[in-house]
Amino acid sequence: MRAYVEFAKKAFQNNIAYRADYVAGVINAIVMIFVNICIWKAIYEDEQTVDGVQFKILITYVVISFLMQCIYAMDEYHIEYKVRSGAIGLDLLKPMSFSGYIFSYNIGILVFRVVMQLIPALIVSIVLFKMYPPFSLSMAIYFLISTILGYLVLYNLNFIVWISSFWFYWTFSLVTIKDAAVMILSGALLPLWFMPQALVDFINLTPFASIYYVPITIYLGQVPMEEIALVMAKQLIWALGLFIAGKLLWKTALKKLVVQGG
Amino acid sequence: MPLIEVNNLVKDYKLNVRKKGLLGSIHSLLVPEYKMKRAVDNISFSINKGEMVGFIGPNGAGKSTTVKMLTGILVPTSGQISIGGLSPHRDRRKNAMRLGVVFGQRTQLWWDLPAIDTFELLRYIYKIPEKIYRQNMNLFNDLLEINEFMSQPVRQLSLGQRMRADIAAALLHNPEIIFFDEPTIGLDVIAKEKVREFIRYINREKGTTMLFTTHDMQDIEKTCRRMIIIDEGTTIYDGTVEHIKESYGTSRTLVADFPEVIHSIDIPGVEVIEEKGRKKWLRFQKDEVQVSNLIYELTQKYGIIDLTVQEPEIEGIIREIYQGGIKIDESLCRVC
Picture (cartoon, rainbow over the protein chains, first blue to last red):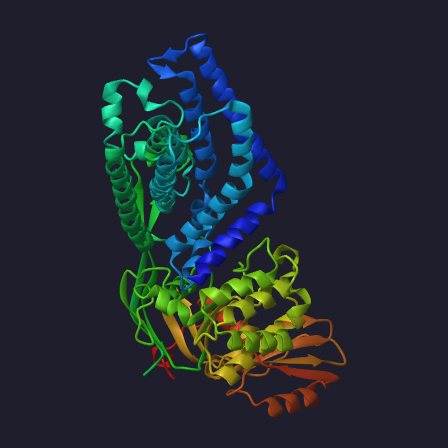
């Protein structure tokens, strides 16, 4: 167990080493929020509501979504690089769980992003964009739990895409497609309220809504108290389901592993 | 019971056959064709605790594939491997606890961080008790002098330093078995000697079982008694280094410097293989021609200013085996 804590620490250390990248990350998050708010402002013009949605609620939605994207970012090509360079062989020679290692590595990145990027971006957002606070204290707590579950759903989905590099070696296209699907279907860019009912029905059959839409609507107090347990259970089931699928894929990948070079 | 037992090991690779040209590559994209290649073909051997075994063979002979299967990172197509009763790929993590692996061509050290950070990390990965960790670090510093560069980022180390750190890292958890994959590649003569000396010391003091794959015959001669030669996926020799020398190194070369240029030498069983001015290289079989008689005869006939007798180097013998000049007798396999 101690080893995995150390992996996370090393990932944190590695990230901190690149100072320019860090500053750029914070600025990028703020600029992205700003640009999106401008777009929505143009859509709303002088209207108070569009489709019955208040402008300020939408602003809050956008800010929360981008702050979440900022901490949900993971190292998408870590496994691919290891597979292609053959460095994975060295990892497999260690008495450790490879998926455990990858997870703790990403947790290290997550902690780095929460501490070093989320906090400054959050302060700037509160001052600059005047978003709503969480609907209530209990909703704030549910929001935190739901965000963690959302992270786990996204992580396990990503893991499946990363592991596919054992077959494809290059996963750039796959990662891009996955990113696009997540951005659109999870409500990260456009709240699901504005989407046609047929599409929303489809999205409800996929894990995507669990990633962004569920935590944000909990934050906004749009999920009734009695439904909270249900939506979170759904998140948990998706996280577990994808985790099991990833595990099975990893087992198959290990069997077909051909270490490159050396 | 031997520590490592390998029985009828086979590994097939599926290779993607790509056709030539633009049309060919489109064809390959739409209708991929595969070809099976047998990299390891029915290899069996066993190794006892504390043995040092050299694994040699030309490039692409199947050495690395065999070693990868032994470490559990490649799954055999068929056949059994048992390392102290465990199957390497099925019990990968348990097996990894008892293994140490050194790759001459890649490093297991964290590239951007000081070497000491990797050592600290390994301590947790292998759950090494504090006392053993200290002991080993002191030992490695005494023998490999690693402390002088431990706090530098690994990317700034010279190859010799990096190799020493890598070897120390692989041995930190007192593994029972160590695999060395070309441990001295690219090192200078002194660094090579240092590494070999360290390896011998560890084998003697800790009774560690060691397997080498290398192209440097000096590595084998200076560390191992036993060697296994692999070619085209099969074992062609498994025995001592001396034995192969005795069996195939029967020719001798006499280099003689004569007082004047001699045009032809006619002694039965002696062949002139090279000449340069007054110097001649004469090859003969040691059991056909007695060297004392030959020298006597040459002195009588032509007079000799200077002479040396050369034994064939193990390297030369191996080269001939690879080129097919020497066919190894069936009976020579598994002599020990």
